[in-house]
Image 1 (cartoon, helix red, strand yellow):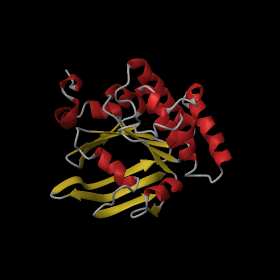
Image 2 (cartoon, rainbow, N blue to C red):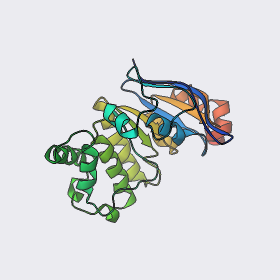
Image 3 (tube, helix red, strand yellow):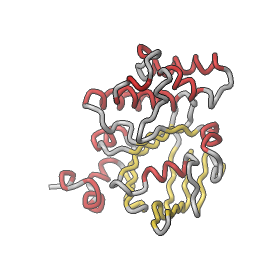
Image 4 (cartoon, helix red, strand yellow):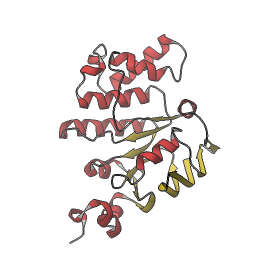
Length: 241
């Protein structure tokens, strides 16, 4: 069953078609990877789904309902959470306070939002830094804070925009495990990532975007053997002998 449908979505910036007639179905409970070169339109697609920008043409449906034109906070309340490629926590607030802010998009009680925040900080293993100011966190902890804040909105679907970029190998493995655990909670995950080892481990399907168009879709094994994807993005190390 599809949780999200994109139907002939187009977004232009001046004369540039950043997203060009993209149609895509995302199945409930899956992890779908979205890959492609820088400038391919991946983050633009996330911004369209989350309501930060609106498409010129096409429709976006979440759980069968059209969400075009809704504000980001409205889409979040419907059940779509997201992280951002450039992590910008509220630096002068504590880690706990940052996640409480996420919870308040779903509940009106500070006490209830605090309980949600404490649970999500434990989930991403940041409970020991709950009272640390966010600007003091290293990049690995900031990435996990971003995930915890998104989870506090209690999403049914989570858009993860390069959550692993910039992490060392042990931090990468830790976040890969966190993403797997998020899926076991019944959350559908739409993942943008350039760290191909992580994408291949996590994704059940992968969609490849280039110049705003989908050029391939399939399992990780199929994508790693696709000559057009190798030429456009993956490089010769993925080519078959």
